[in-house]
Amino acid sequence: MATFKAIVINRTASGQTVALTDFDENDLMEGNVILRPEWSTVNYKDGLAVTNTSPVVRRFPMIAGIDAAGTVESSSHPSWKAGDKVVLNGWGCGETHLGLYAEKARVKGDWLIALPERFSARDAMAIGTPGYTAMLAVMALERAGITPGRGPVIVTGAAGGVGSTAHTAIAILLEQGHHVRAMVRKLDARADKLRDMGAEVVVADMLDIIAVRAAMQGCSVVYFTMSVSPNYLEAAANVAVTAKSLGVKAFVNLAEMTLSQMSDTETTSSPQQKQEWLAQQMLRWSGLPVVYLRPTAFFEIFLLQAAKGIRDDNAIRVPFADGKTLTVSSPFNLDGEAKVAPRRAPAVGQHSEDVLREAGYGADEIGQLRKLGVLA
Image (cartoon, helix red, strand yellow):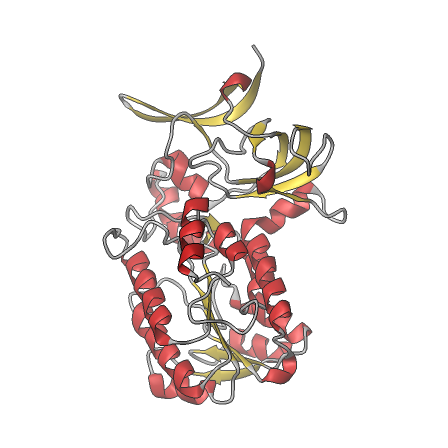
């Protein structure tokens, strides 16, 4: 019997167990590529899974780990051969498909992307799943022809906190030659740093629609991001109403939650997820040229929020209740989201299929969206 080491989550009559143990190769799930993972990341979703904090795992036993970079051991897929260096992000690994915290994995070749020669496996996982999503967004912006000459880009929540994408987004946009208007709630050292980078700094609270309008005047693109807040929906509405009134060319909605479990007939007990889902419905109705990104929640933010519980009683507490979310490291995410925009002049509410897939949508969900004509 061939076995390998893996972090395995199991469920018994007495509860959930997690252990580094031997796993039988014969019990691997279907796939046409055998992968040897070399590096992975500690995603928040993996934390929820192994601590049984939220119902992430859909089958047992489950190997944890939603992403990895490694080497192909064998393949019957036409695109891959033994020795190829590859990266896998998401695709249900660690949730519905055996994950990547293991010495071996059997996956579908269509889930893999080639690891660029200039990156090591460790480099790729230092960037992580959100960075790959972000890079898709960068390419979408470039294909859409969003150029510096089209007017300023306003970035909300620009000062941000640990895990915020705004700072990196601003740096990338400035490097490309865009005029970036960084919207902050107050002038402080973080605002000074943005100004030193070359951004125009404006002060406005997203809950003050008059101030938002003054800050947004003359901008062609809105990059909307906001951290977890009980006022998220109101802020999103203020920014969207203003953007619609001023006729912006693109509205990038960075929603930091995975909302695939929600609809008008199925909800969650997470207040934040409810607000973000409602905000996205509002944006779909708005007639704005919206690009939707769901890079999930950023690990750094909630690691800090959870620090006290971890220190005091070894418990992770986050504001999601039983809502499902996938959390990832922020720097990679930024690299693409900074440049996100529609693949072409967008129809209302259109999504990029690649971004949807990387944001956690399954093939069935994407198929339904394709039938409805809302994919770019």
